[in-house]
Image 1 (cartoon, rainbow, N blue to C red):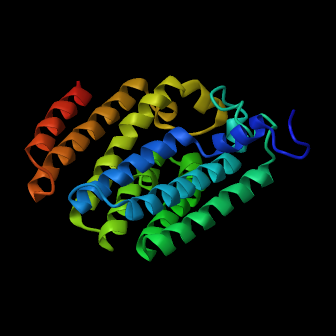
Image 2 (image 1 turned 30 degrees about the horizontal axis):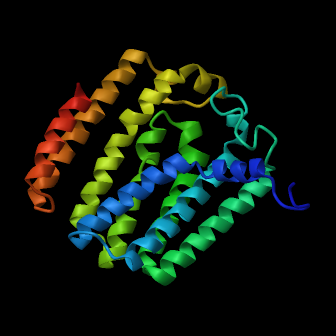
Length: 255
């Protein structure tokens, strides 16, 4: 029997869903990858834990704010109409407060137990995602995901900064790899959800141009992605194993 006044498991899961945990996991993976590279091996737990906790809070908070701001769009799309806010299980103002609080705690965790630069970088990712992508580009430009994807490419900078106290060239390469990976990934999804985006009035590339033109843009960005991935080896931050993998996986992606 549930204790009176306690939150039900379904409500708790709705709040977890607001954070988009699968996406958070991928973002943390890129931050940890940068930490391993910066540390030259496994980073210490006292270094990695603040990045994992703070990064999860920052990314989850940004996603909750995205749910709040996109509630009108989400209610019209079949893929998103059952999300917590359009599904009437979480009130918009609750999602807004939740997102702000998570980001505040993220800044404190990173600022106190990592360093100020990593905290500022995580905050910049949230601000860029919320104000530049969600509020502006997503609703106004077919290039929305090209520019807006920068927010999802910041976690490696956070991880690198937590270890080194700065942002080095290898971290910028990791940023670039994720930056150029985002459009091919997202446009493939947008091709599948073309009708949804059209009904919602979101000018994703497949909505405003032809499928063939979208495929050409996916190919173009993938060529740039593979090139940047392979060139990473030239700064000697990675070795032969990475070089072989980047060529093999890169050409598999192109195929």
